[in-house]
Length: 166
Image (cartoon, rainbow, N blue to C red; front, side, top):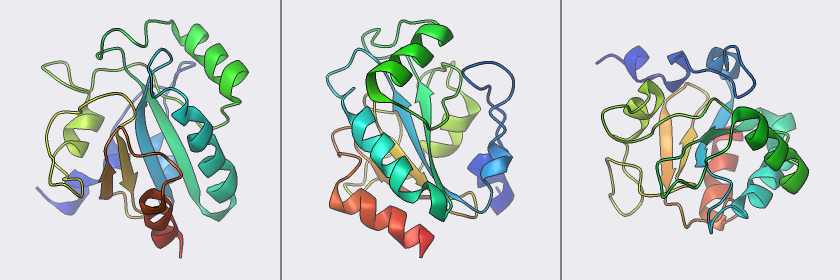
């Protein structure tokens, strides 16, 4: 595979509200891609994700939420219900994609490009749970992977994001 084949931002994925999520618009920015769910014990991470968005958006950064219902059915809502929940409950301003599968035969092409990258513990492969995080560098390549339990505002996530912005 060439480097262009690994560029995460070349993948087509729909926006939550319809149409394309237009990932190429994020070229030259750092992007934190997170598979999200509304009815998970980790759902309060939306707060930290939104704070990262607010803190770094002006410096060429965005969070990209990717709803997924593959983990105990914790994202059962329609696109409208997900959008309303995220906005009303957590004040989410970062973009959300259509609901996709992140594991298995139906795995979306976006996650095909992400899952081969190892986290700090060496985990590669299937997404383990909701709120697994991938940091994409300005060149569209994966630069870091964080476990679902890693808080968005943890020192390691903040350092990785700032490292892509500096």
